[in-house]
Image (tube, rainbow, N blue to C red; front, side):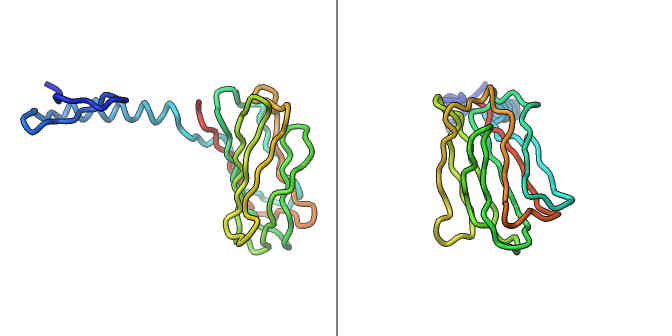
Length: 172
């Protein structure tokens, strides 16, 4: 017999002092939790460690059905030859300047792309910057179904070998 009481969302067991506790109840609860987490998971889609220097990192999105995702999260751990500013290009929109990168690789960058009714909007965050470490952007008219790529670029200080980037998707 399962517990007398259940949680309201996942219907997990909540035992009273007189309820018998069975291993099968725990296994069923764990299965429910696992399914709920998987249904709304942040999953790694792709990523790369650069083996050569480049001024632009192009993240190709054609292999993904982006309509299955609520948002994308792009992380960058840059190594540059000098301090420089990273810009973001979403689809065919104009580049948006984001954050100053440190030459020693001590600052990373997180870019959140949210699929909104009017386009792709989002924010960026650069840990390690004392001021100006966050901001927002909107790529009007760009939708999840027509977004083919995003680009990170640094014209003044190319990304060196060892720079890492990863793209995650937040399932709907």
